[in-house]
Image 1: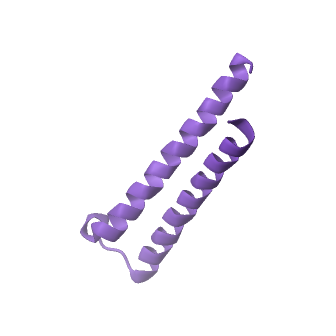
Image 2: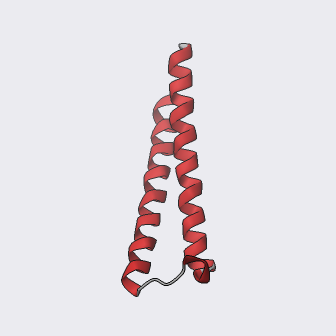
Image 3: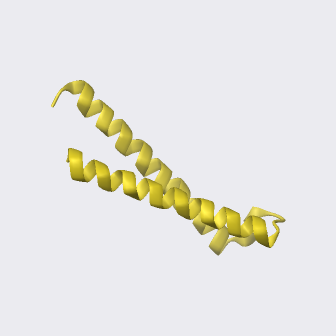
Length: 71
């Protein structure tokens, strides 16, 4: 594998792992420490939950694709 390809794949993996950690942190904050998110309406809360879950699913999908095609 070329050095560039190796670095590019590592960069993609690192970004996906970071995005996964950020999504998990957001979900943890919202679900376990709701006082930490301030004054949100129910609609905002559900939108934030769905956004964090979508981010998590996207990151997991990217990591799976990298593993499947570039491991």
